[in-house]
Length: 256
Image (tube, rainbow, N blue to C red):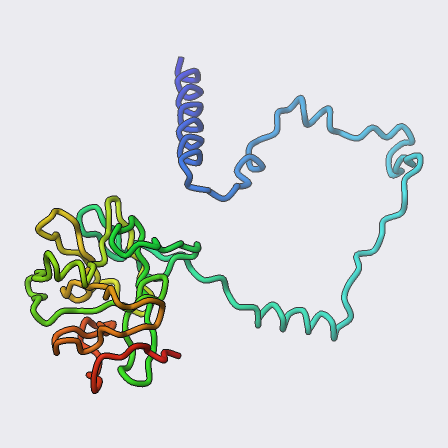
């Protein structure tokens, strides 16, 4: 009775381990099966038959002599080791750095290509934040398509609050994140990335608490024609601050 109980327990444990591996754990195969005792019947059947008597090995018909393992010359082996050491390690997949309700903010850029939405008003379930260097205004944040993102001086960041609504939001479309959302920042600290809920129920991406916007007059990636407009709109820096002021609104960034 005790022996049967142990057998049932062992079968149950093996089934549980199999279910864990099937859940996407991608567990590496182990050699545990090799450590199990071999049944006596198998051991006996596997014993070699030697009709020629002790101390003599049977000759196998057609058997070929063992082939010596090929080795690389010393110089080639050294070069192979050097190449292996010089090979870059694969980039680690980004992990979830923080969560804000149903939005996951990751530790870095996605390893998969993400196609940004063509529309700046529709929002997306996956948002990329990148950085661009500009010789006139410094480093600023863009979306995955290279479009400039701005901040508004009339907003607040503690607590995050947007004051750009109605006609203002038509000229300055907010960068929206939809549920279930994922944000992949590159060059922006994920700990200061989040979102704020707008009055219409949509959710706007924030950097260090500041809501971020597009400008409707920016026609292509790199345009910063909204820079310094009305003395209140500025391309946002990776830390949420304002980029350097310019003599006036620019038609093109000249970004590198």
